[in-house]
Image (cartoon, rainbow, N blue to C red; front, side, top):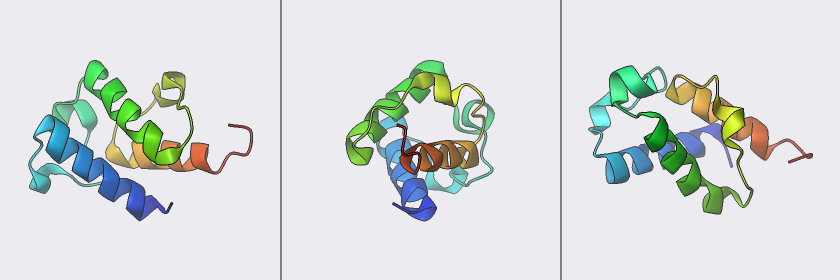
Length: 84
């Protein structure tokens, strides 16, 4: 899965699950400040990514995530880490 595909999947989750308008969704968007995604919502977002990725994602990996770009980079890194 490419970074662009991950971003598009996140866009769909944000629009469908959290009713975030598409114009607010861009890589630099801050989860809490710009998109109103709180910590509970972020966990829900991770849970929704899990089946798509075929791996269990640990919430600890997302502690320093602040923007959509951070989410994409973290998930992409986990996908390409042979130890996960």
